[in-house]
Length: 183
Image (cartoon, rainbow, N blue to C red; front, side, top):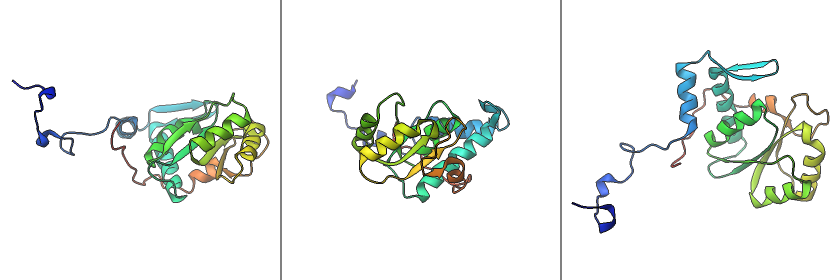
């Protein structure tokens, strides 16, 4: 009898496409959109999205990010309350192969600027609700950063970035996306 600790060598049992797939909620979302496409997935005020629509929006986000040069291992920062765009970022960002850095909107501008730099954020998605602190953080950050702004009616000050829904319009809902190599 052999155990893993005794030097047993089984290269034929190494991870490969036949015996391994990463566990990821991305696959669950795709499956749910296929099995229950018309089931309600998101309720936010008057906004309603089915699983088919949510999946399509996440694919569009991933494709729009890729079209902007975002790829595997890049960091996307998001500063938003619990709104559909934040949920979509939790799927769309990893679908693009990128890493999501969800920022705590209770932090001050200096801390947010530090996190943006330390996390090497390549793009920021921010809700207009936090415009004053986001603007101050970007000033402290000291260099330009692509900005996508969520206009959900909670804030009336523009951040000067691309509006989130227009950004989604840049992406293809049928675009292929990447599964993480490993969880």
